Length: 389
Ligand code: RFL
Ligand code: PHB
Figure 1 (cartoon, rainbow, N blue to C red):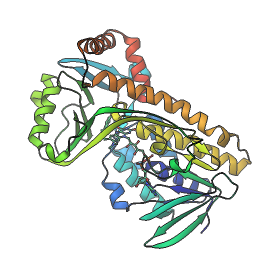
Figure 2: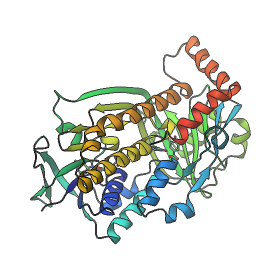
Figure 3: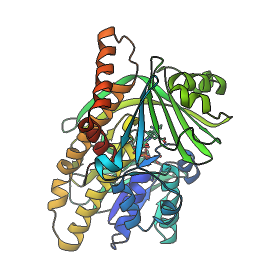
């Protein structure tokens, strides 16, 4: 089989890239390790920047998002009982949209299928060959049968555990990493959200986040131990812990119910450089990870896809490779800013094991500064709604 761009990974990065290229007449094949049902069962991001919303409209998948996405003009940061409202509209002249990654992925699958886009599911043993030469190809297995896909370019959109990044030789690849000594325990419950905006809550008992998917579906998280397992946490224990960490006024009105999903995510900051090696280009979690505190993971994946799709379109249409040559530097410049913001939000709001009284006072002083300084609020707002691309 032959295609122009072989895309490894059918998560949001791979599907969006495939759709944007297809609309410009560029042929792609997506190779996905799991089944479609499995990809759609993953509960992940919930907050979309305006840049991603615009891209989804450009990709022709904005209809349901326009209908069901919830625009948010601000968010609440709390510290025990104190609250600071960050006003995105006033401080950054923009907003964000709450719409689940699962729904983004579902809309993209539907659009790809409507256009007869080629997605091969349940592929095994994907290997990228000759990425540093003129004629790269990908080999893989489907149901025990070996396959070969020849292509002009390979897009590595296969997430943190994929094969694409590891194809870049150790002598070329530089990795930067910080692993945090805690995780996030998240639940989904068919209950009304406790507040119409998200609440990022720091407290003496640790961090919590109140988010949502729609008016009848809430997504909540509490900071948990790095070795905790979801089955260690009963729903009752989760709700008790959440109530302890959010301001009393919200704790008193919180509606609880049975969880319909419960999972733990480790927290990590990670960047792999460069994001290009020969004809292989990395996008999204394949190249970088942020802790979820700033809601930047999916959004940074989307800015990569924007830069790469534009560069590939120029290469095919105008025979101009300058965008491809600059891709790694351009994408990384924005990635590092998202890394900084996510690391800062994480450091500000979580309880770190071994933190001493001085460290706690530093967090406290930073929150006080944020509360009293509109410039500090504007910096947070501008980063949260997303830096331009
Ligand atoms: P994905 O979503 O991991 O998709 C990669 C796909 O590649 C497949 N794959 C392979 N396919 C073929 N061959 C192989 N060898 C393969 N290895 C893997 C996988 O099966 C998968 O389908 O990466 P992608 O597309 O780059 O998308 C990145 C986002 O998923 C991620 O950054 C976000 O979910 C992060 N994130 C958030 N981001 C936001 O922007 N806003 C948020 O509010 C937000 N909240 C979150 C999050 C991530 C979380 N978790 C669980 C890590 C909340 C949580 C709890
Ligand atoms: C979510 O709704 O899942 C969510 C929202 C904001 C974050 C992280 C996750 O920062």
